[in-house]
Image (cartoon, rainbow, N blue to C red; front, side, top):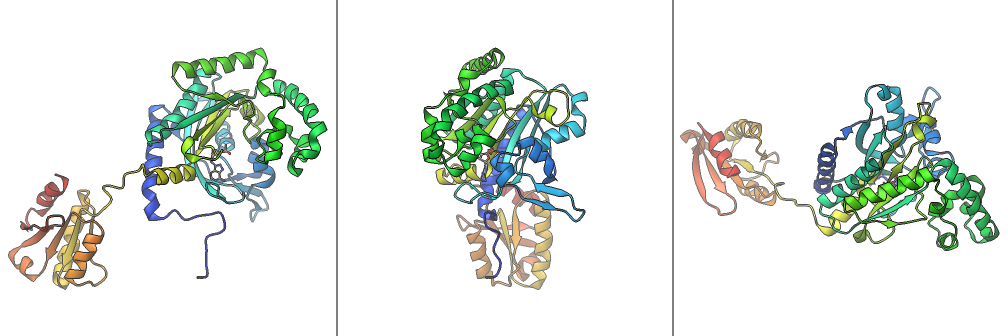
Length: 421
Ligand code: AMP
């Protein structure tokens, strides 16, 4: 074997596709009942969209982006996430003048140069929702319930919610000052990355995965002690709406999320079944991002969920039904003449929605019946010189082995009825 997929990029094989369809189907149906419309942005953007949107000092931008110069010498980046692109599109197409509240969703691949491991790859897929144009805490609660409802409708039972508020930029400045004075005397104990973060982006230390760093920040100051009145009221309202909606949550004071654009509400939805700390969905409010991109100050809130992680979980829990995947009908033939009729028959039956197959491998009749069995065909139609002469086909029920004759004059209706019954 000479060629392999690049490290961290995987093929999604046909046998995994039912899980992907289940997830994508549930995402689309939930998004549509929550009144979110789909947007599809390009897979790559000019690098500055992410550098500016996500933040230069975040891991995503400083370490994980696939960035290259195109043939015109422009720096391009494969999207590591989609919120920055959505906001770029919102402004580019002047949606602020077209609708008061833009509620959009997306599904698609993202790219991050990370160390691949279970549930973490370099090309992965996210579904996400963004609501741009309102600072109503009820909208934060709507996005949280949307994220949860998608997971529960897929059959996940133990879905939990971690919630925090990281306030507005002014609150954060205040908090960061206190955090830095707490950490400075302990900096020797921090990992090399965090020692650097102490000057570049101290908040990031809170979500460092290194255990000693986590141990050090554990007893440090918490963001929620630094919220201004406006942010405190917003946070209280979000919690109160969640209460109304009967959504349980745990307040996680160290939850800050890895992207710079968040303000006020941040949250993660996780599954107890997933074990580790890895979240299925992450999101929050980003009231400053539209303005950062040159628009009017416009509040917004959104989330993104990882499909690979969800599929892994659904596979482990065997929550997706594979029924209805086999063939409805295999059309077995005995000679050239009957094969010519068979391809016509199969085309007519496919037009009415049946899943059919004929032999493309030159198999004997016995071999064809074996093939039909292997692919779970409900029925096999057998066509040979005798059938053609009598203007009929032999229809075999693969489960019972019963065989009947069906006239070639009205086989579509006849077979269709038997299969859908
Ligand atoms: P983020 O955009 O970092 O907030 O991540 C949101 C969600 O996307 C996470 O909770 C994961 O489910 C998923 N995700 C993020 N990065 C990866 C990755 N490298 N591989 C697989 N899933 C990922």
